[in-house]
Image (cartoon, rainbow over all chains, first blue to last red; front, top):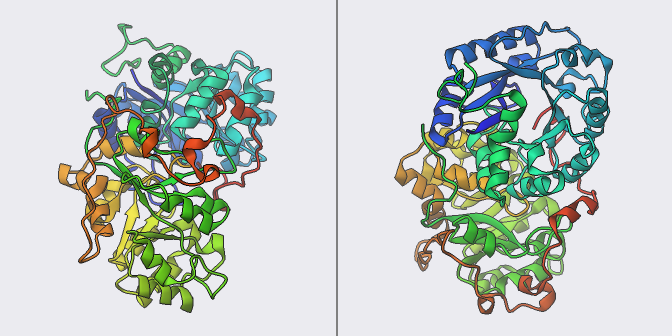
Length: 251
Length: 307
């Protein structure tokens, strides 16, 4: 069971995404064996979280078992978090929303008790990994996914060190500067049980993200944890559970 | 449901963009061959890191001493007035008998479309590899206009400027594109559909850039087998084969499950401080947490909130 912790649907203003559709993502997932992907709609990351969250839920309904939804919480708009059978957790993007991750404005997101995936960018005033340590200490029972593991190569090791003593923080490894070698390094530093596969597709290419883990110099047990075992544990998913459909996801 | 492969397909795959030698900002393998073997990459166009991070001439000297047919040397040329260039003139470049050169106009501080660079390139008639970060679309359009027969390999194009990259491919028939960083969903297929797979080449920029993801992508492109074979090596062969020149030898793809690291005897005969095989083994991975964090942010302004 391969679970992608970090995906998107839709368009983004900065550049061209040739295929931003859920159909295209599912076709690629089928080609390479990805069971399910947690997605937020890029409209939700941008100006309209409520409508973007609705779109993501609709995609999850259209493709049962293939998409989980990270509901975006915009702290300025106080986005309603509706929950639902497809919801994996809450997505925060401190850089786009220009609100520091450790700002109390995010408390409603943590109050849901759901896992939180947040963009994490080294040296960003909004989402530097040091802020993940602060928030993780505040909410030690909430799984907190450090998106991009700090984003820049010069910050990967620092991110791992900063959150090492906060076991509820997991390093999610998507990003254009990540390498298979760095994934192996991070697994060696914090343990493979705290590293999660994410692709950032459709923003980035799903195959590149999966290939980094598939061909990284890891042991097979480490690879299995990173590719899905860890996230399945966080989300309470098990491939043999009778409520799961073909994708191994709760339907 | 399709199953992913954990082992790359065997076959001829040539990486158009690899580095050999140490880099100052990380602890990375200095010899690309073990990783090439592991990932089923038969050969690679290589530039020595000394040419990028120290002295272009010293890097070229080490590179040209390698004498391994799997490593296709791409030395760095710095056009300039006498005393400011590497090497001394186009004649010395021709004497190297290489198939491609690399230019770094921003790093080495020369004008890519200045009169001297244009004269050198016209005299050399060799393919030129240029990192997108070292130039601009406008400069490349000017270069192609001034030297319409020039073959250009654009390295590290990324995904954020896909519109500008597509315009370059539309306007410059002699421009080939390294696909390893075309990392947005379906980007490689989109370019192949518009401009043909025969203008896309497999390349990674490893070990600084990732090679695992692009290698996996190559095996899982939604293209025909002929198109994929072109990207794997055919397009690069065409780029590197000037009319009348010797054909590039066929590289049998090492299967990652059966190949072994290259014999020490086949490794470079360069001076020991330039010789990757003479370097000590890399430090354990855990020690990476103590390395200096002095790298500059790799993405341009405007990258806030993005990947």
